Amino acid sequence: MSMILRPVFLLFSILCLLAMPHMAQAQLLPATGGDEEAAEQAPDPYGRETPRDAVTELIRALAGQDYAQASHYFDFENADTTAGESDAQVLAATLQASLDAGGKLRSFSELSSDAAGRVDDGLPPDRERIGTLGDADNTPIVLMRSESADGAMVWRIAPETVDALEGQSRDLQLTDSNIDEIEGGWAIAGAPIGDWLMVIGVFLGLFIAFRLVAAAILWLLRAALSDPHTNGLYRFLDAALPPFALLLAVIVFQLWGGGASISIIARQTALRYIGIAAWVALAWFALRLIDTIARTLTHRMEKAERRQAVSVVTLARRAAKIILLGIATVAILDTLGIDVTTGIAALGIGGLALALGAQKTIENLVGSVMVIADRPVQVGDFCRVGDVTGTVEDIGMRSTRIRTLDRTLVTIPNGDFSSLQIENYAARDQFLFHPTIGLEYALTPEQLRDGIRIIESVLQENEHVAIDWRARLKNFGASSLDIEVFAYIEVSDYAESLAIRQALLLDIYDRLHAANIGVAFPTQTLYLRRDADGSEGDGDAAKG
Image (cartoon, rainbow, N blue to C red; front, top):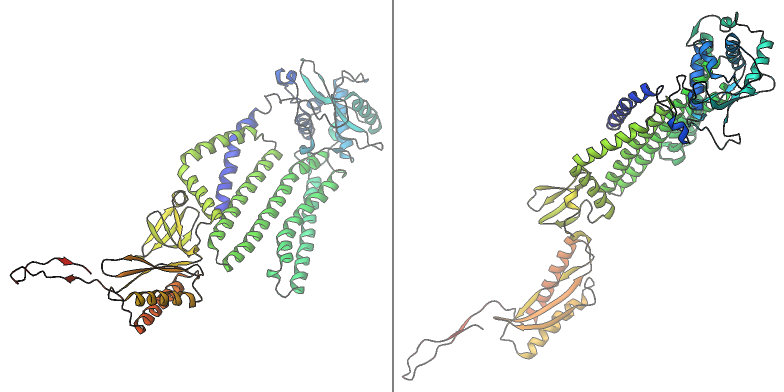
């Protein structure tokens, strides 16, 4: 697992370093919108370019009870109210009190980060619904995109919501003199300590409860099954239930936190960052599922003695984990509000540069995938690769090792291995039986024919010889009458083929010997020529 975490930690660090400058500039640069006007406008000093930015900055102002700052997120110009600066702060405090009383705001991930807002929500293009007030009528909280005093197009709380808040402020009897008393007691980050403790306690309680239920289910299955670790259902549930307990806790917490009567600051912050727990749960589940599948496949491949397939499973498991954790890291950074688009693009360029520098390594990796997928050889096969002949001992992710006939170990990088000519002797389904049997020249023609018939009968009677055999007089050789035998031995094991080959040759020799038909060996006959006076002279030598 540490081999997986190291590259993922490196990926996380790179993304963080790449995203830090963009975080610092987030409040200065205008958000990209759906029209050219948004791209050309000057940066808004209050960060109201998109619905997500406007709500985030409004919550930040309310958390600090900076109602003067919060009043900039209300569109008073188009509202029916004639509120002054102090009244605007009262309306901001009213909004916070209404949300604390059970109002709802959409979570960070649900809010649009586009300057044009959502265009598929059934509202006018300049309107965006972001939640509901905590009144009896569940009055919607709507943002409106309009032109600010400095000429920029910004998102602010719409006039109809402003008018509704003015009515609630009278009901709550809030004035500019008592708005500082909205949050009483000890507070952390703008919310009472009790609310933070409730948020944390509810989430932990939900997770512990679901985790205990998951443990109970697994305990019951272990008690009911004789060998649970070989049961597919148990292995799946063992991988899925622990992270699923965390995911269920996140879902139930979101349902509870949406309308709980606690500080909107605590709720909104928890709902925003609870998405991290959701991604952790999904990544946790996927990682455990990958490990379970990999272990099952590896066990099956090892039983079948397919070691190269085990290498494929190992490679696929590691690659899947790295990709999964990379996606989860990007999603978590996005939840934190970090723009990772530029960072990912830079990471892609860096990855391209790294790939160019590690071209040979990547070539060997691709070569190993091709060797394992195409399967020209398997572990244990006797083969010839280029000028190397031997038995394949291992097919790894980088190289293939071959034990030669001299008992040396040759390591061939898979990039080169996949490009070489490979002759796999172990893949033969038949072995060629092609000897040339030389008979003596001293044989009569009838004995020669008998010798050929004897060889044919040996081939015909052996059950391991394929039917398309032949035995023919091929040549009048230098010292023998050459009978060519052409047949196939129908076995796939090399050692067994050698035993059958020996049996055939011995049977042929025995029958020829019994028929008094000799097998020739190299001989030389010397002829001496007599001169006219009867003396012996130099003769001509001839082979026969």
